Length: 125
Image (spheres, rainbow, N blue to C red):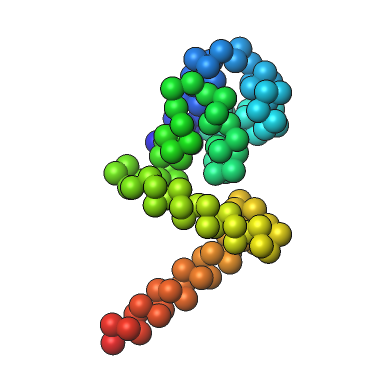
């Protein structure tokens, strides 16, 4: 699902959950109105942290459903492994004073993944 489709999906979830406006969901959840507006307009990929905050306020959907819909989890991917991975990444981010969506932390994860790829390539030779 692309960002525009997710935005429409999210807006329908919000309305189905009884929130007449983005501002009402923002006030209840603590996620800013502007963030919710960007999610629904399809101009912003919501962070896993915000999905975790918003999920309990939406009916008939859970955190994993939202993670899958926005594209963080692939269809058929075991959810419990993803949850555990996200939990571990959140812990590591906190250790260095960052969040999962912080560009600096994202670069650190990418660097780590490249090191793993290189190490695996050397193991095969």
